[in-house]
Image (cartoon, rainbow, N blue to C red; front, side):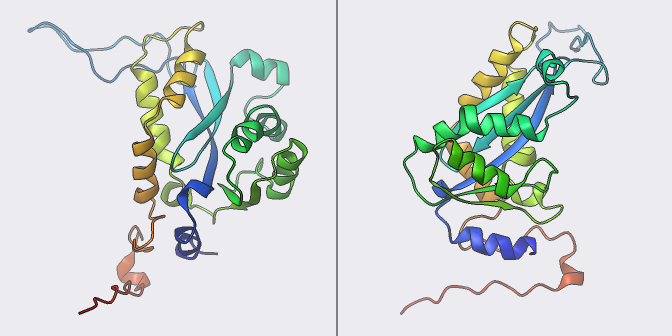
Length: 232
């Protein structure tokens, strides 16, 4: 399925029923992008670790156009306990069972569709079974996006996650004692209006040209969207 074809399907869905799930991370070396100094002094921020060696804190998160759902954050110690170097399928299933299924069930909205990228840890059938075993029966479908569609179709990718990382930076300097709470608070306090804007940016709303972000429109020659008829 092409990106445009999937967009057409998602456009027809109520956005409150359209959920996206993805994984991201923050490193301890994250630093603020703005600083205040007296006139005549050099503007700089202090970073104690380089990105390559700083401790990484992973997060699994889910969102709709109206709300964020509670995340699950894994510290370096958690990864040691799980005996993994990154997020694995069993960690994702633990997130569904322990956090996400209960949070989604509280929405009391049937026919929800969960969308994800084609990561090797994302198995729609297994994840749908996890939701059902956790007592969440309002997820009707779990779907994967087309290949290489994350940057264009997923509002979490480089948009909502970008806003979240900027909010985390506002809590700098971060320490081992504060980084997890800073990550969770920044995520849970994302404004709902920003979520809706990012859904619109990904061309998931009715009336938006599904080809508007095509990287090579002259070569592909996509059909022009039909304009709605104007009644006299």
